Length: 293
Image (cartoon, rainbow, N blue to C red; front, side, top):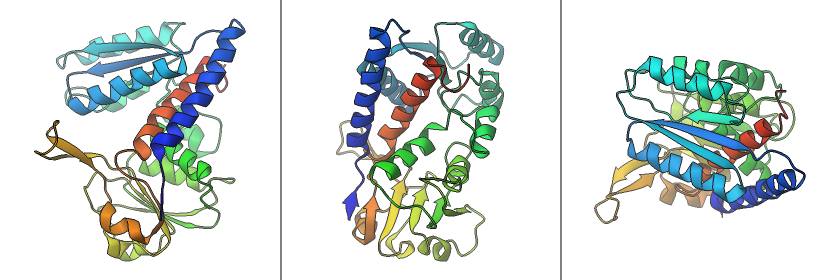
């Protein structure tokens, strides 16, 4: 069993991005600029945004954190998005999800200029990804592809089972893995809450991608020997022994599943760090006008 070290790979990717940014600036080019909008005080969201701001510093990006109270109106938020769309200095920006219930997430996502949508959630980017055109690819699936590449995990003709059909992970992941090329050319099945004989379906997989947000859902009896397991889940589980009062738990019963695997990602330290790297890569592409002029 080999542990897929997302933390180590993310540091490697950040160094590569930092070198490119240094070269751009040395040649008189513009420093890439990422802006992040956060609404309310959700603990998880605040932690993610802090990581994103810190990562921008590490690679030489300019970053702007724009925070609003939970009671911001939809009209006010859309107005702020419009300002960022029009700001020539901002190359890319994201609105940290989830949003408070009174705000329409889809409406907010669609208000972002797709040429600055470095999260890859806008329907134009989703559509372009789907048909294999250059686009800002959704950050978590892009991070998973990077891990598969860097560990040279074979995908050609392999059976991939994705558990979870979200717009953020499940659907784009399936779309990317069936594309021609590497990592791709896989035979992909998406499982969800209505899948019959789910254990039997998952047990056939060469690669399992667990992304449903259900702690320790994937158990050892669902995994065949020699499978690769990618755990996207990050659920806060109470843990009085920790200073924070909680620990992060994945969708995979790591202790019991790991001995059966060829490769497995831990939680934390697996997919999470790669998601931020993908966001940085998209911002660099946006700054270079590499996808959209």
